[in-house]
Every structure is written in C-alpha cells, then in structure tokens.
Amino acid sequence: MNRTALTRYLTEFLQVGNYKDYAPNGLQVEGKERIKTIVTGVTACQALIDRAVELNADALLVHHGFFWKGESETITGMKYRRIKALINNDINLYGYHLPLDGHPMLGNNAELARELGIIDAESVEGVAQGLVWQGRLDEPMAPSAFAAHLASVLGREALHLGESDKAIHHLAWCSGGAQDYIDIAVELGVDAFISGEVSERTFHSAVEQNIHYYAAGHHATERFGIKALGEHLANEFGLTHHFVDIHNPV
Image (cartoon, rainbow, N blue to C red; front, side):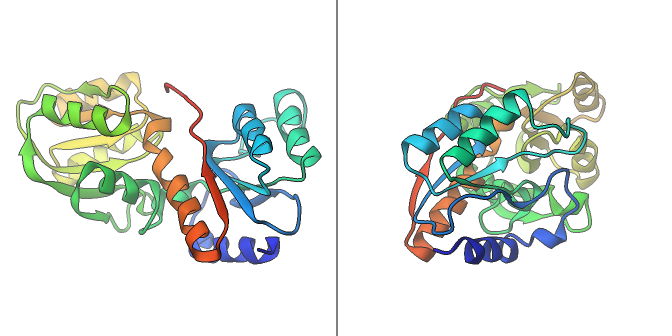
C-alpha cells in the first residue's frame, strides 16, 4: 500500500479533524513509500520500535507517539535514539491519540465496552469531545465481582475506590488518564466510573459522591483500540499485521 494513501485513509477513517489534541495525529516520522507489514502497539517506546525492526515492519502505528505539547522540542537522548532507529530502518511512525480513544467502531472506549460485555454502549455527546462513554451490564454485579471481571479481561488488578454498597448496572468509562471525568460520571447518574489512571483526589471524589471508581490501568485500557485498528487495516488492504504488547504496569 502506498504511504500517502494509508495516511489519507487513516485521517478520514479516524476523523482526525474532529479533535483538539496534545500531539500531532497522523504520520510523525516518514519511512518507506510502500507499506506491506504493519506493527501496532500502545506507545512508541524503544522496546516496541526494536520489535518492529525485528518484524521487518514498514510502518509502526501507536496510540502514544511523539511531539507532545509541553515536552522538550529538541531531538536528544531517549527521543533521538527512538527516532534514529525508525529512520535507520526506514519505518513510518503513525500516532493517533484522541481519535483512537473516541472512534465509534474500534476506538479504545468502544473496544473496552466490547471486551467487558457492556451493552447499549454510547459516547456522551457534547462532553469532553465525546470521549466519555456510558452503557450498562446485562445483569447487575457486586462491586467486588466487577473488579474481578475487570482483572480477568485486562490481565491486571483494578483499584476499586468508593464506599457505596450499591450494585453496578449503569456505568461510564474513559480509557487512559481520565480520572477527573468522574464528576461527569456523577452527573450522568451512573453506579460506577472506569478510567486508566487515578489521582489522590479521586478517592475523595468517589467516597463523597457515592460512586464506585475503578482505576484499571492506562496501558491496559488502551491496548484494544490500536490492535483493532491494525486488524482493520490488515483486512481492508491485505497488509500483514503484528500487534506487540510491551508490558507496562501503569
């Protein structure tokens, strides 16, 4: 597949223009023009780049790429080594942040709902660029049972905060570092809110607002979208796809 055609397709498919983001979405480092093999992963860390080299990737697609607002603008140290490895091996790097969180078909939030068996899942319109989702469980679950369900699906323990004894039926979620959207969840009247990361203040918010909160891991909640995107591209264009999950306990 031609690099320009892939770039154009991803821009349109992921509706990049609909989001105000903290990093550029799209092609971040240019590599070879023809793309046959793609590797996907959550973050463009050195370990993932090295694995992409081993797999003879023509393109690496990630959720967390480079050139974030507020970071150093110089290409030195860790960033230099990562970019050097990409350039030396002629690998294209694509990064898609918020567009991959919010995509209605295969975004992180849509895929998380699918993995957890949440039904009637939908984005909350007009709130946080549509990144907060809500839905319900087919049958209510006790808080401890839902924590176990999260652990089973995500492969890691989830931190449960809150002192409510109510069962969980209606819930809201947002993957990644979205703990402060707990107040939006309270306004929605849900029983529980899930995000990836947690802050000290989140505990008090959960207790005082009588809501269950689950910190399920930034990395863990954002594996599914980029994997689904790679599978979609493989099916759509006949590309070879490898999803590489680099361990991250955060």
